[in-house]
Image (cartoon, rainbow, N blue to C red; front, side):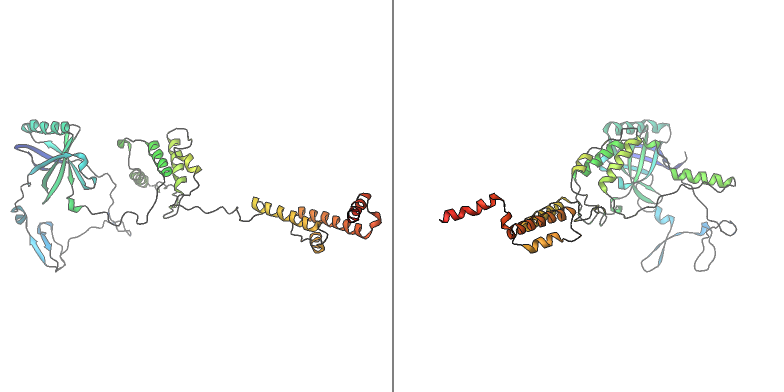
Length: 379
């Protein structure tokens, strides 16, 4: 691999000559800009805005634009004269636990290669010291005209360096977290834990860029004169739609278990979620359309109608309330059949008693005995 920088690691009084090599490379598919009419390449030209002429690379310099638009020329000699002790040195300033480095600071990655045979011994010494201490080295170095911050760690048998952003280059996450208060229930956390446990771990080396593969296949098909590989149908993204969080978690756990060949039984915490009467606060559920309030099949409505029927029957049985019997006998067609039957029976009983009063000669002996009793008491 081609080195991009030569210098030395300053480890106290120990100097280790090294070469800096890029540890990463971009594998993304790049495109050229073309004229859609004829397919010709579209190129950029560096033109001076004062005279409109194209400027060759040899005549292009640096300048700093002031707030009022004034250009302040800066030459390479000006930059080279600055006191920059790390111009050719990676200066280690401290050794810290790896957990103290915020991943947000991570930038480009490099490999540090020993430059020459004399560098092998001090290089190996630093590498083994980093391994045994289980720490990383924080260092300063200069690259491409500016001083930078770096972190040295061991990867296999090589010392790697990660470029770090300066602390003041990390923006504070103000206004990013949800502003409205949200309560997460234990049942939801249990399902989230079950989902994480089901997904388990993954070997990062087995992951690959599916989109890049699809682009390469499309290009290969077009190069052979085809129309390209048809893209699979994508479901419409429901951005911002409200979902049932508990149902989504339960479905995710089952899908993950099925993908791993496990039995898709109830997830841990799923039973508790089913017994809970509360609905997830982030996804209020709508009532089912089939359940109409006050339907004829509801228990409360049935009990009320039974009670009404009994009351109507009692009122109809009383001989003094003839209007009630008329109402019961001529009830509305909207009333249940049970109420109509009860009203008819009550009307018949009322009519029988009325007839008995008009014809006292046909009254049974028991009734006459009852009538004679109060006369003997009065005598």
